[in-house]
Amino acid sequence: MLPYIAPGINPQQAAQYNHNTNKLAIWSMAAAFVFAPVGIILGFVALAQMSTRPQPGRGLAITGIALGFFFIVVQIVVLVLFWAWLSNTAEMYK
Image (cartoon, rainbow, N blue to C red; front, side, top):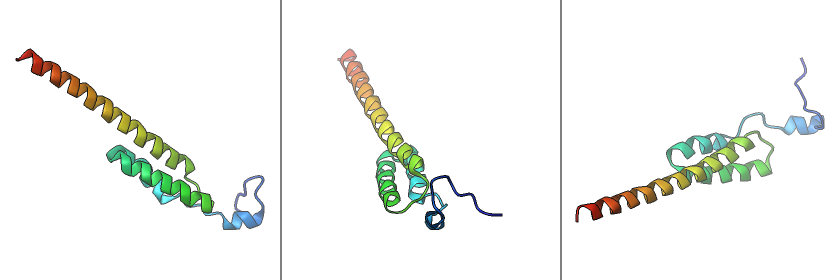
């Protein structure tokens, strides 16, 4: 059975195409949940790698970057709210 070749790709390009998903893109998305800055960095490195060689995983890398920034914003909001609550509580017991 012949392998599937996407429309618009000639057989020479298909032979060079790597069907393995970029590992850094996968790690980017996973790391964004644990330590957001690492997820962002890995996402950008994965996008840079995929710009030089055709490889699936662009969506995973972009998702890792977006999740990393999202979790950083959430952490900042939580810290600001905690700080406001803490300063309000400290004033109550003066």
